[in-house]
Amino acid sequence: MSKPADPGPACPAVAVRLDGITKHFGEVVALHEVSLHVRRGELMTLLGPSGCGKTTLLNIVAGFLAPDAGEIAIAGARVTDLPTYRREIGMTFQNYALFPHMSVASNVGYGLRARRVDKSEIAGRVAAALDLVKLTGLEDRKPRQLSGGQQQRVALARALVVRPKVLLLDEPFSALDRNLRGAMQVELREIQRKLDVTTIFVTHDQSEALSLSDRIAVMTEGRIRQLGSPDDVYRRPADRFVASFVGDVNVLRARLERRDGRTATVVLGAAHVTVPSGPLDGAAPGAEVDLFVRPEDLRIADGDTAVVAYGVVAAQVYQGGHVDLHVESPQLASTRVLLRIPGQSAITRWPVGTRVDLALATEEAVAFT
Image 1: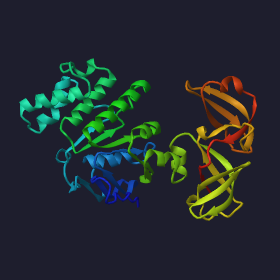
Image 2: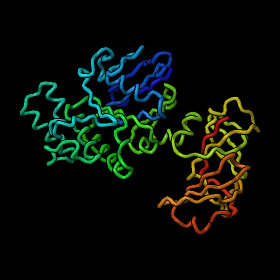
Image 3: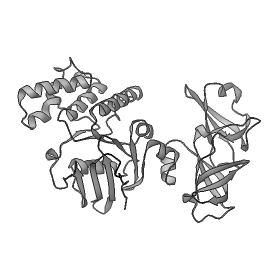
Image 4: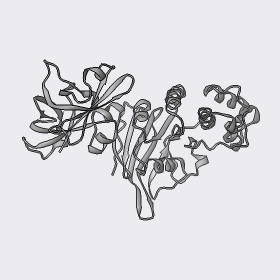
């Protein structure tokens, strides 16, 4: 069973509580007793590959699906059996789900009309929502007259105008190009913080999750594998899946030297690296282990650093602010080792075919048996 992090007495109140959520689709178990506490005002991201259960979990919070077991509470009130319209949620979808025959203003005000809000109040709230998402002046346009980013803003304004207790976002940027997606991520985060609205965000994009989230729940096979801050998930992955899925990583052959309580020391060439000892339970000193090292934590050795291995530059990939070097080092890894070198100098300093000595740029990493 996936256990929620204990909010603790000093933490904000829990806005959404999921306890033991299980969902089957025929013989397929989509969710295995998932438990999660989302704090008031935080942006919680459900991150995982396709089919991991993240959208199913979001739809259960929204009320579009009913769990086979478990309980759901929003703002302290049990909503497990309540229909969607009574849960006080706002939601945006991957395809935005705008009404093509309605104007921007009519789309945004739809939820208010459904709730029988007074017409004069609707006009004011729609205007405020459009101002919030920077669409003032486009009230009379139809969705087909808008860009993808503008359509996304309309969908967001429609979700926010009802003043939801919880905002649910199902991969809202997946249809946008890279530059527009980055700009919309910044705008969403600014709006979310300004309104202090509790938000559950679904994505399979690791960089999106790392840049947007207060906390991330990494999911696979219907379970939460790790729940923590972006830095925790990136720097201190709980298991092999999380370490491999979140960001680029090198899996290097190392040797366990000793265990010291909560930490252990592994040897990689001439380097000694401190790692958490938990993932190495059962391994004896001298055992071979896999050391997971981020590309930015490897560099070309100079005279003052401990060499972990040598290799040959097999490829260079220019990325603007940095250069990715792909190095063949059979004694270190079964696949090419990736180094992320800041700036552009790597292109001329280490051309393809150059023999290089590799060193670690960190004294901490994570290892698994």
